[in-house]
Length: 375
Image (cartoon, rainbow, N blue to C red; front, side, top):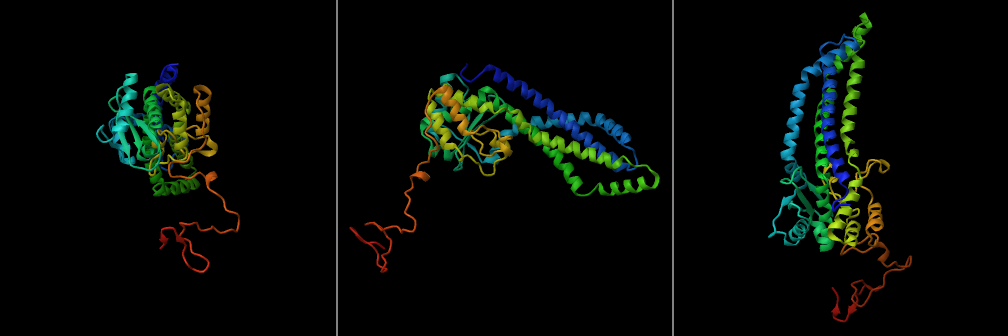
């Protein structure tokens, strides 16, 4: 196995990236067809369903060049501006060696050891413990680390996390995740616009006129079914755009963990880093697309079906099985006290004041310590 995982995994990511881009255009065409159905009903509420379907198909053919140009434009904008959008959402800022010598040196040493182009280094001011990589080409690649991660992990653990993110870059995972976010964004935008149109009730009058004409002369019976078909197509397109992340195999996290171990030669560091990050990685205000890029995504879906990351227990078990190392179990951060370490008092028994306690005596006086009376 290569330093960054199976070459088939990299090739698979490239193939899926192309399929996702092709799927973007298909979803947009479906939305355009749904919009055309609605507009045809709006302009003529007395047609039949075959009439509306044929007319909407003709409208789709006429609108396809514009829809294609719009999709390409969105891709171009996202290609050059996705990092700025992510930085705005997370508040991340680039740092230099002078500003973050510890973090910069760790990342640089990893890149030099494997001949990797040094990605940009960014810091996110947040107490959460997490990190993520972004970018679509070597000039755009960046690794973002939270200040909470820097405070609570030692050098070996931070190096393992950086190795994890470098592996995502080399394996092509970041490109695939950015493309999936682009698809969800553009389809979600079109879908929301049409939903708002329906919510404003612009097509209620056409529905009423359709039912009236239908009852009076038997025509217009296709208006309501056409609207239903349009709404169903819209919902399906939106739903597919939101669950497109299921195309991002969760095996990518196992591969990145393994790549980090091969870079650092230290499985214990990767395991302890995961244990410290566990359930502490939620980034306030971050979108689902950003959380899916992180080392750990504590957001999970229904019955774990839609979770974008394997559980930390599963990842640690894989590291122990295939890379060795030891699992310390859930770890408390510096300053935290594990629940099983807190002394328990007998039920109903008050705490006894010690020689330095400020607790009052039963008679209302304070405890006299060896350095005098406490205030």
